[in-house]
Length: 417
Image: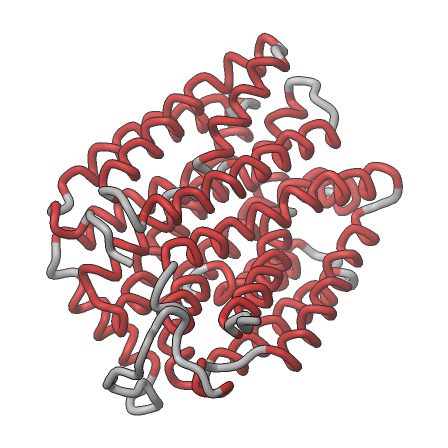
């Protein structure tokens, strides 16, 4: 009987680690109202904390990629999960708005950064020679899996009890994952006497190691990237991707639904329903990115997302649950389906060695967009008492992004894995 390659076990540990970090970040939407009610904080102030978190975990991506090369996969995952744990523990004792900004904005932002930025391509590149696109798709989809399973549960706990037991549930899962990482995570296939999955014989490679300061590595990668048009096209489209997904939707969708009279648990269930279809769509996107023109995949994803966002305010205004269901399907299918083709193009342009750091910078643009939407959405609500303008703006931006990606050179768009 053929043994299962240990890379698939690494994939599983990484998958569940990302779930924990992903649900921590996506849960921000269900915590806005209870934080507002218990502490009396203004919604725009709470949005600032979540915006800082989104920005910081994104901008940390290239430095996390450099640190992975210096410190190794296992140690970095343990440090990051422990940081996430510390932030969640401190949430229980916060009393002032500035404490929320430091705890959620800085500590949780840094703790989630590794898991939600460069970990997926790093694991795929270092543990898989074949099926890289599929591996990236599975790992990227894991952020939605946590949302799918846990958001309605968290919303129900908050509605029936308070936000503290809900936070306690996430905290417990983080402790479990820290233990699993300690016992089962490995730095590379060599640690278990294997080659990358799908590699028939060992090939000569320059070993990555602590030869340079991680900050130097990160900025060297940026200096190389900014000279190429493709970097700006990918970064610009990914800015819009972040603006229209975890920045706007992750932070404000539940509150937007509530403003139209949709109950908290129903709104969270709609978001988790999108997570179900995102799990399917992003995994499928990884499979497709191994086989088809990645530019046209991205064009299709952004165009569909933009169209669905423009229709959302109408669906909510009419209270049409059928239309909301259709929206959830289409939006969910390509929530983060953009990630596998973006990673594939980055790997082809910059190579396996440098693509981790440079993709980190591209993802930083994603999170700048997310932070802008998280704060901007709260600001728009404060001035207009409605989120409609923010969601319509995101839809128009997505339609613009669909044209950005077409200008990427064709040689970077084919089968890349």
